Amino acid sequence: MLPWLLPRDFKERTPERTPLAIFSPAPAASLSDQWLARRFYDDGVPLQVVETALLLGSLRRLIRPADAPRLSPIRSLAYCRPVIEELRAHPAPESYLNYLRLKLRQVAADVNVFR
Image (cartoon, rainbow, N blue to C red):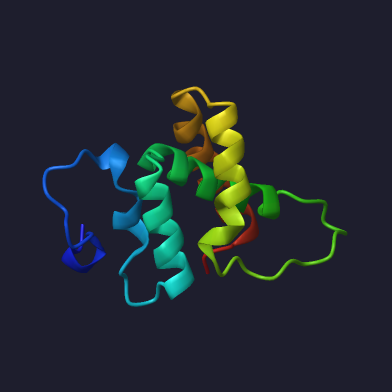
């Protein structure tokens, strides 16, 4: 992990408790994303829930009917906030995160998302 991604008061925290470490204060993170990442951290949102929400939110956008209007890119962590709330209310099984990672790789290969 890159040092500037860690919160200033980072000590010996478990990875599950540091969603802030992913998002801020990364050079490209907006102030609102940094604030929201801190909020997730303060609220005790596990890192696995944040990652699951990011993957699930991205996949929901990518796996749409071909004739659906094209959506603009996700530019803010705020997009994932409702998904995080959904996952906190109805936790996903542990194996679901690995499934989402695999599914994203498959979808990306099919539609050349990352090229």
